[in-house]
Length: 104
Image 1 (cartoon, helix red, strand yellow):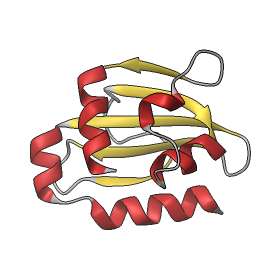
Image 2 (image 1 turned 135 degrees about the vertical axis):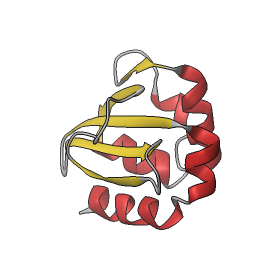
Image 3 (image 1 turned 90 degrees about the vertical axis):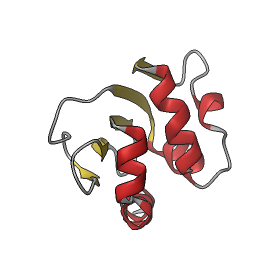
């Protein structure tokens, strides 16, 4: 589905350089189609992304619908616009979230 496809793309852009400069782990708790827990690890050597809980504790946990997540990563929705009250939440290090925006 669209969420899995988005993560496939993300895996393609995760580089050692991103991992070095970001040093953060993001967990996405997605509701709706293709939802569940997904992660982007930009802390562990090499980095990784995929379905399930991250291999190390998440620095940032974002909760949103899978539709909003896909929109966020296809640039139809600026990341911080996704965190409007009511439809999603973000917990953790906001500065790390800014570095994730650069990756998008």
